Amino acid sequence: PSPGKSPPDTPAAMAPSLDDLTMALQLNMIITLFLYLKTTYVYVNVGGARIKGGDRAPEDFYQAKEDEVAAKEAELKAAKYRAERMGVNDTENIYLGLFAIWADYFCLARGGDVTVHAILAILFAAARLGHTICYTCGLSLPRTTCYALGQIAMLGLLIHGLIASFA
Image (tube, rainbow, N blue to C red; front, side):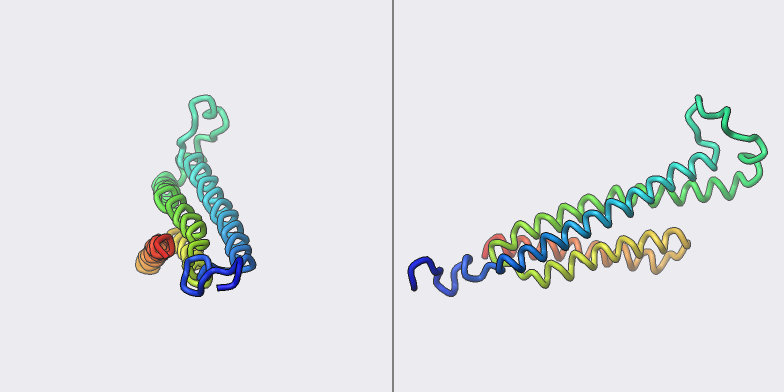
């Protein structure tokens, strides 16, 4: 081999280019920001649903009008439950998904495929958005499908990173 060049079958020769790694880094930051904003939106809605459902801090009860809380108690409790479940589901999945996205990214330097990384990262983000939309609209089967796609994408990212880390 030429001085300063890696043999064609070594991990350094198979590693993505700096441009590819930069694109993957930019994609990761966009997805991280998107998932942060999506999760924050869900958490704000949880708080709103709790307030509408009558769950307030004791010092905040002066703000509630009795007829507001009593008018649609069953509907408000159902909306509160749905919002809380969305928040819990995000807590259970978003952070692990972000961990998988970033772990896979750091393994790209060893020889992973940037296109595979990008597809799986985008699939995870899209699946989580779809899950939230389906949960909000009460669509059970599509919600389950979105959840499963997110889990598949997360597992794919981790397997891809594992394979790349041993390249």
